[in-house]
Image (cartoon, rainbow, N blue to C red; front, side, top):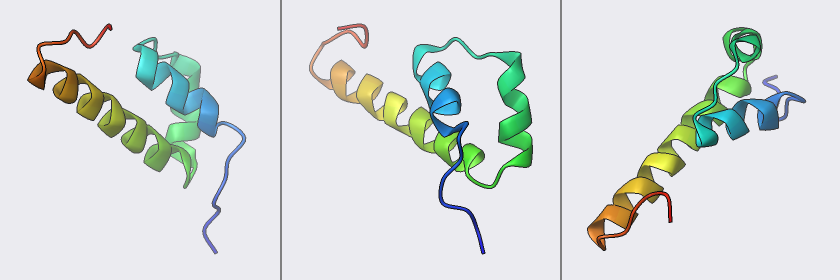
Amino acid sequence: MRRLYCDQEAAVRNPSRSGHWNMDLRQPVSSCSVCPDALLVAEFQEEEKRLSGSEFGLSAQS
């Protein structure tokens, strides 16, 4: 059965949002069944946030 939660999930999601990727996080992403999905979702959400802000002339930093 596939795991639904990983202790490192938040640690993987947060740097992807801030853009401060830590090389130590490569291990959970490469060896875990949860972390790659968490990273993908976080990156998608950030891209959607950036694009929705640009539609209204807003900066992604706002």
